[in-house]
Image (cartoon, rainbow, N blue to C red; front, side, top):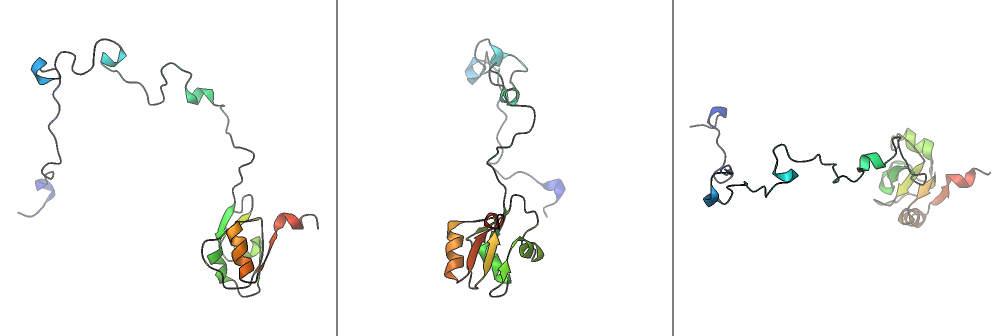
Amino acid sequence: MANELSNLKPVPGSTHARKRVGRGTGSGLGKTSGRGHKGQGSRTGKGQPRYFEGGQMPLQRRLPKRGFSPLDHKVFAVVNIGDLEVFPDNASVDTAALVAAGLVRKIGHGVKILAKGDLKKKLNVVVHAFSVAAKEKIEKAGGTIRLVTEDAGA
């Protein structure tokens, strides 16, 4: 007979019989049914919420109510060095060029170049941050790098 929704059965061995507790001392789970003697864990409706910490002031009450963001955490728009191959040789690559090329949408705290991929073109890259390996790859290809913060005073 073909497999139809009305004939589906679990794979043999994938289901187990329900554990029947409280059915006599010979079952191994009689009398207290595996709950021990007295106390909160032995009562019906037992169990605490996942955040319960045994009476200690819970984490969600110890933390401040308002949002928290550390001052030193900066979120950069990330561009891999292999993505810069879309620019022509000797091109000047800055945040405006990256946005125009569709490589960056939200700039946030700036643009950071990472070293994933290869670069074979000579480019003049002006962004907010570079990884060490990305600097080496750009300079190895004959390009130049400049940080945006260096231009702020000029």
